[in-house]
Length: 277
Image 1 (cartoon, helix red, strand yellow):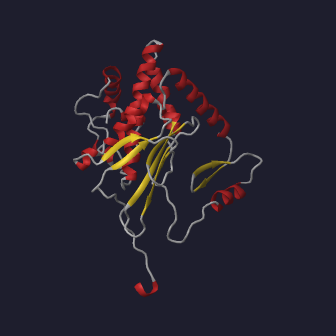
Image 2 (tube, rainbow, N blue to C red):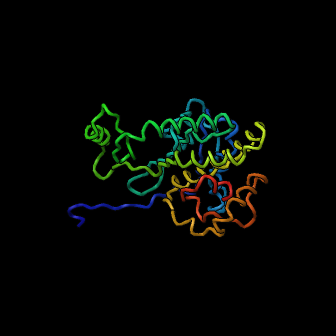
């Protein structure tokens, strides 16, 4: 009833009559600049022209910034997630600017970093294995013995304040830490026959492939796309063949021709599938 007011929800979209420029934060490690750039530029294939561009962020500019779309590297080795957010014009649905946060936990550029990461995850599993947990809007929270779960829940929820109709929701909050750790353990075991230099080189390359895909996934969100968890239904190999496929990727630095793990970068991909997409 228009006399009593109503709600109109617009599709989120950019104005593609002008370039969409993403700025890489100044603290981005040089060994990941190319992978992050390629992850963002991946979407130009969908536009069939060069709509997306990637530049270095101006000095002192970090996310969020009203005048820049920032891909922000966050040096936070205990946080296993990537996060995407954007601001839209509520009158039209036009996306005005966006930001993507990449935490450094997935920058496994060598065996020592891999071992450090795995030790931290193992410690966290042991620390929280016997603690009660509650589910909040931000995910699972573990409650220490001297905390009250009811108060903890109230504290988490009480911080969310917004105007009616303008509630803030995350586009994506990708937290695959424990699964990533399990697969990294398997990967290190698979490569155990390599010397340290060769192993570091392999881990860096795999890490770059992983970050490239994560960036493409998050940029997809800030372009207005939602998750597509049906993408893996397009996989064209049998599970029994996967180990051989993955070994070829590790040895040849590329997947066998014709192998499809998913039809969509907007799915949450298995870490060991990403380099083959």
